[in-house]
Length: 432
Picture (cartoon, rainbow, N blue to C red):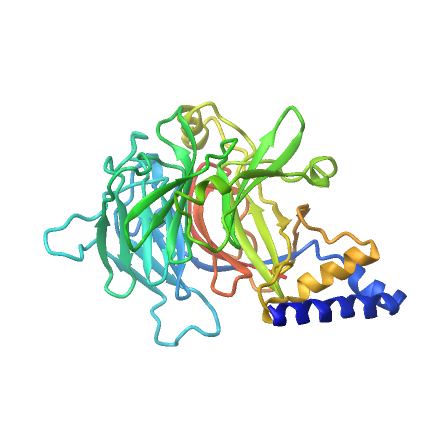
């Protein structure tokens, strides 16, 4: 505690010194933290008509493991499910080993002889936990949930083998279009649908050691846009009547949720000026909402692509995707939602981050920190063209995306384009 107190004193002294600095200090801290800039690089592409690998797909997942993008599940043309193979694409980072294979494909093999492997699926949830890729739920080609026993599937990235985990009740009901996140060595699950017309707002915590599920508070609204960052679950929803984009959060913290601590958790709607002017990106389906950091404790949610259209049920949704007469209006824009800087309430002196100190100074000087506000990202031109001469993916939705190991880059693969075609390319988006 003495270290924390000492840190707080130093931080306060820094604020005071900055205030005494007058105009120079004011200029330094007044520099806005947004908009961020984004650069696109195409990292791989496959002929979308090549059905051998079926990498032209949508409604799949992309999970980053050791600088490899693991692509699993989804559907190809005519809503056909792809195989249960896992495809990996090595990302072009400096720390990548020169012996790494650029591309590999792993068929579904059980860890134990005679044990089951996951069935083909689409619209499932996935996350990486240590050296394992976890998969939950999804649906078949008829929009019926798979895994009626609510099994959790775990793929070991070193042995390349699957393990099935079936927990006792209580546990989440079978579903699709939900979100799965790693959390302190365990897993969080939120939302989704149990059928074409039934939306779910529930939240669950899975203990990877005891193999038990604990239900956390339900969200006040349903959302297709869900992210987990710094111990907090975020939802983006739309209010057509108010013409505003709303954000809800559930602060779980660092401690493992229990039945006893469940009552202390509560969803909160975040009020900010973005609900008035500007209105923000608008809630969308088929896009991505992922957390990134630009370093020094600065956190953002990046919200990009997808469609602002809403549909009553999956029948309307599928018509809008595959019909030759109806084209879905996908977006090509990117937005950031700035989160509170880390360590505004540190546990030790080493927890203090420059972003938190800067925001404290900005507050003292009367400047806005930019927290809880939307800002559109500026896309930077690049001289490096993609494999097909492309410099931008273009409007699309229902792609797979995940945050790279550097925390500030996002990898996306595939998805549906504005013409209703399945794409088979990968992109690296770097934010600054």
